Amino acid sequence: MSKRVVVSGYYGFDNFGDEAILSLLINYLKKNCFDVVVLSADPRKTSMNYFVNSINSFDFFQVSGIIKHSDFLISGGGSLLQDVTSLKSLLYYLWVIFLALRYKKKIIIFAQGIGPIKNKLAKLLTIFILKRCDYVSVRDLKSAEFLNGAGVKASLLCDPIFSLNLNLKNSKGIVGVQLRDFYSMNDFLLNRLARQVIKDFYDKKIRIFSFQDSLDLSVCVRFNNILKSLKPDIDTEIVHELDISQVIDKISELEYMIAMRFHALIVAMKMGIKTVAINYDVKVQKLAAEADIPLISMSAGEDFDKIFSDMKCLNGNRLKEFSDNQRFDWSGIDEVLQIK
Image (cartoon, rainbow, N blue to C red; front, side):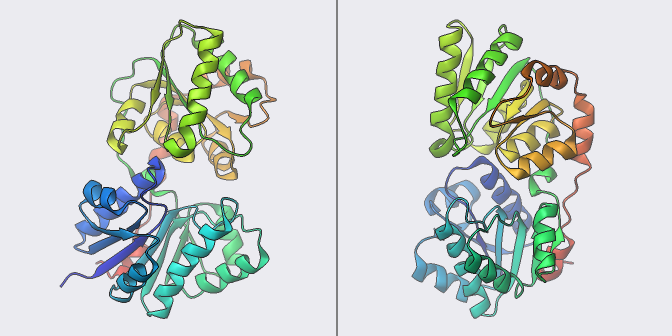
């Protein structure tokens, strides 16, 4: 009889990065003959997309029941345990893990980014719960240092998206711009970026990516409108409402990518696309430093001529080599799941 794994994360919200991680994780679990149940904000869509059982993340009675009658809980990936987005979401994900502890299930924290956690009680609660999990893995050094310093044994892994097998299919000289809304998003940045894109790429198609329409689409439309106001005949396309494979296919045609989201940067670099990061979060700053790619701050005070010149001088093969050298280590997860 197959053992059942419950997967908890930011699933069912149409976020490209989280859904790509879920796809990888489901494929791995199915390959090893596990019965998978995903907690999702849109269980019908999740079931249809991945051919798994799925229940509503916020049906607390059903969530409790499915964890009680399962063998393992996997929490992650992504940045679930933080209260910058919402204290409520942090407490929800901790509640799911607590349920698994209460029912004495094996618990895996899957390549998460931990924090920031500003609420002191929430921080203590997070440490208390994670100390009792069977295997804790994080995707960045800062998270590992925080947890290890608090007495939580945490393994440092790369992001699971690095394990995707991606290649540049047919570069058509298109420029990608991937934006998301955020509290620090501002018109000054959008205008400076638009002017530089027009200055350097006035004769190219500009493909603007929304990775999660509920957060990204409005700012993508704003950016497109600014481009059109500055150069009415510029060729633009807003990419949205596509599945994971379709988005990847659109990215595979790019020559350059200017991106905010962490997973947009990883996917572009894995294809050897010359890439600039927009630093809205410390994880993006860290990735840009490791990959040695140019970085734009949200205040947009940099010399954009130099940044775009540096981007054009990047070696695509070096970016691909950097990405290919990031190998996701499944061994700790295999040990808990008893995969031989």
